[in-house]
Amino acid sequence: MKTSEKIEVKMHMENSISMLKTLNMNHAIIALGKVTEKSIEDSYSCEKFLEEILKEEIQGREKRKYEKRLKLAYFPEYKTLDEFNLDEQVTLSKKQFNQLKELSWLERGFNLIFLGAPGVGKSHMAVGLGIEALNNGYKVRFVTMADLIHLLKTQEISTRSRNEIKRIIDSDLVIIDDLMFIAMEKNEANMFFQLINKLYGQTSLIITSNKGPEDWGELIGDPAITTAILDRLIHKCEIINIQDNDSYRMKHREKIFK
Image 1 (cartoon, rainbow, N blue to C red):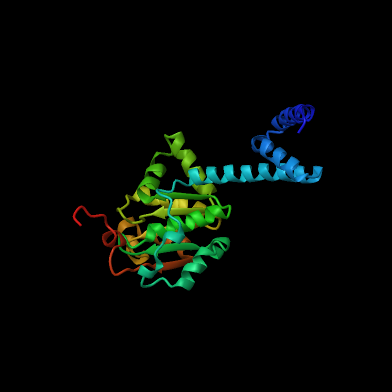
Image 2 (cartoon, one colour):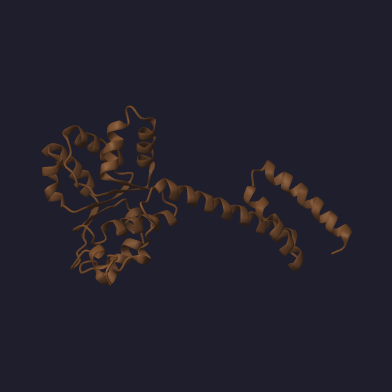
């Protein structure tokens, strides 16, 4: 390329950057040099060049949205369904696993309850499905039952707690981990019911628990509140018992002595 042509290209790029800044197209600005170089090499038409620049901007914005949704999901760790060892499960079939992965239950507003002893993969399944939902554009929020109770109890005095509860209510999918791990006080059970009532019909839930719904009453304490919570959770719900011959963490524990 001649020196005069290089100067002309540079001027065009500076003008383009100025206009892209006005339009807040930051991803296009970053990609401009790469796309310009490629367009010269391959003799892009004006239409092709514009298409490539817009594609870079759209992809950049989608990536940024995904990263924001991932950050706000608060997953304890990034565990995908591809990492889940289905061969070690004795109750969940490959067909059922694939049906869950397809997310048709989420599109139809169903809830999922994963039951099983500690260490059999309940949380891994919940997080994996949450990541799958996130990859498909859904807003997801993961929260342990202990943290959820804390947020509910402090929302009247804490702006952060109020904002977190609002994000939970605005989510497409809420994952509540370790439900019924600890007994609730009556006021906690009532606040939990109020939240479930707000989510009912608009947000799908994934719940993990080591106790079945028939045992929740003794931990919630109030029979009327227990019935009301179960009525809303189980109206459209699949209850899945995840069983294993032994805890996954026990079988795959790291050892000091070989």
